[in-house]
Image (cartoon, rainbow, N blue to C red; front, side, top):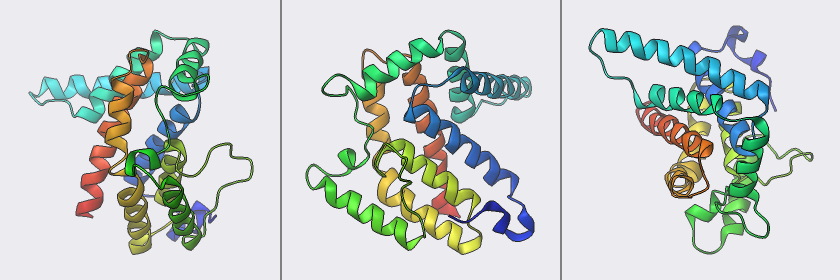
Amino acid sequence: MSDASNLVGGEIPEEDRARADLYALLAQLFYGGPDSGLLNSIAQAGQAAQAGQAAAHGVGQTAAPLTAALGALAMACAERTPALLQQEFDELFVGTGKARVTPYCSFYLVETGREKVLVRLREDLAEMGLARMESAREPEDHIAALLEIMRHLTTNREGDVALRDQRAIFERYLERAYPRFCDAVASCDTASFYRSAAALLRAFLDVEAEALKLS
């Protein structure tokens, strides 16, 4: 993989840095239950979002769904411990035999032939010079893996190449999958914290979908 320092001047635009940070946060949340450090990061981000929301209300504006979703997730963090969140994560996405919600995006893209989706994804990544790390315990179509791929493409590509690669991954593997994944989490009666996490995921990827179409 290339390094962010390969970008012109070694600088990443502030907007792309913010996008990459949110991709990274969401990837961590859906890869495993959050630890205390991640919970603190979410709480701090939520406080900043709530401050911005209050300022927006002060001038008669309505808070954006993304800001509201981040604030709601921060509030959910204050009500949970890492142990409880790990238990919820395991019940939802791991299970004993079959998970309540599958985190693999190929499941939401096709009824059969999901292996073909994974093969195509691996081919697309190879063309971009990317490959799954041997230490990774999940395949490339896991929602967290795709979010991490988008984070990498946001910070390690530039210009038309960056947009081309981001659009390719997003449109082929995330755009049609994430609404169904978020719906599955939201409708699960054992989801609490992760219902808020899915709401943030949906709000962020809704914004990404529009931005990538317009860019």
